Image (cartoon, rainbow, N blue to C red):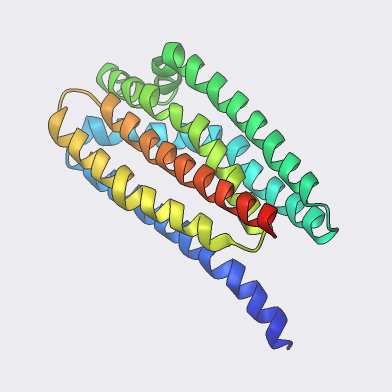
Length: 217
């Protein structure tokens, strides 16, 4: 085994693995918060999580696509093409996510009703999905940035912005909105999306700093 190669793999792989672990823990915490609100709320959140998991197939694929194509172009000494890959991936992810978010403002209850015959669960799930749907827009953008950071060998940036959004926005936001708005799940959905919006701000800032350093060199 080559220690240098193994070291490079672990340098990129460990932050990505830890990031995914923190994300799963965050979902578990959100589920616990929802479960404490009662059976109907827990059922609604569970259904919406499955719907979101399906809708996130496109945004999450941008992470893999940008990571692979970006790394190939950076390795070929074509950093400008890596940046274009990031830009196009953001356009695709934002276009898809924005479309889904707008559609779900009108069809969220109908989507939830496919999985339950309870009017209460349908109403609560529709409220949660209307707020959560905006996460498709913001998550797609920071997924693309995460792929670019990994392509540049800076996966620790992806880890940092995800952990900060979880600890500073997503979990506290979900908890507070759960306590303050006991009759609706819509604010909880928005709190989840706010975590991804926070990640977008961090990613844009980090990208601009990287670009300035590259220009200075």
